[in-house]
Image 1 (cartoon, rainbow, N blue to C red):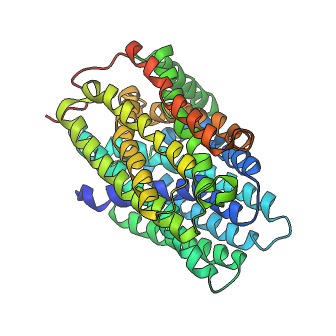
Image 2 (image 1 turned 30 degrees about the vertical axis):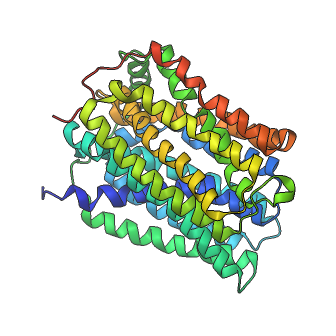
Length: 420
């Protein structure tokens, strides 16, 4: 086996993981807003797109058992490219909304399977010291993918729309993404190390389902995976679950209805670019801090850093400042805290996943996380339209602090995450 440089595949792999998620879960919001869909419908239907991430533990054992993680990565990246092309052509159909939601849903299944394979490959190809070192790096490049999906592509859409129609601009962007995923699949085929071998034996269904049962039983019997840990995973992102559904509509809605009245290009700069840079800085700082002192030492502070900055949206909704600089600073502060705080959550999921079936156990943990994002997000649009943006962001701030009540009941090894 030829040894590969970890830097040649870790950053690009997490860009490939984060980009479809950003497009499916966030860029789609801006697209539907552009097509005149209401906030209630946007939040409800796009929140349903979390479902594949919620139930992905049901098929994650198959990713562990059949073929290799590398094979799954290649296959899913190909299918995601096909799905992007499908969205592009569906936008011109009479029933574009139902059709694109259906394609996004299929893509979400591909993307969640892609996540399982990538995270499993990461834990197989790197030892614990390397995993701890790269935790901030992978988070950083995952967030760069968020910028590509939420910032760069939104700016491109806005620029194209200045010369052509709404539908054509979105069609062109999704065709570009289709080509990107085929290209990055070919790149990963060349650079990802061969750390696995295909299993020679063919398993019968009884053995497969027996092993799946063993995977789930071993997860819930795992030391530390008890009620407080699962509640922690469910509520860690509670405030974010509400915020992320309505952030883009808030920035794009006109001042008359309580929004910020930004153009798509301005939204791409403020949230997608300034926000991304601050998130990257927070992610790098968080990874460094965790490698120095460990997860247990930083957990409380990182939780506060993730929740408290949500208060900037209360100010924005109240003052509606005309300065793009002020808006950018506020969004940047929130994203800086988010990037710093989310590294602790990622490392906690890896802590829970330790053991024989680390790929499947990590998928089960992220499934609970996705459920915690899906259910609140479904009602976020309705709540916002009933309460208005100001009261809605007050609620977001309060919900972000709920997780603090769970932390005293968690058990975390004080040495976990420290770099040797």
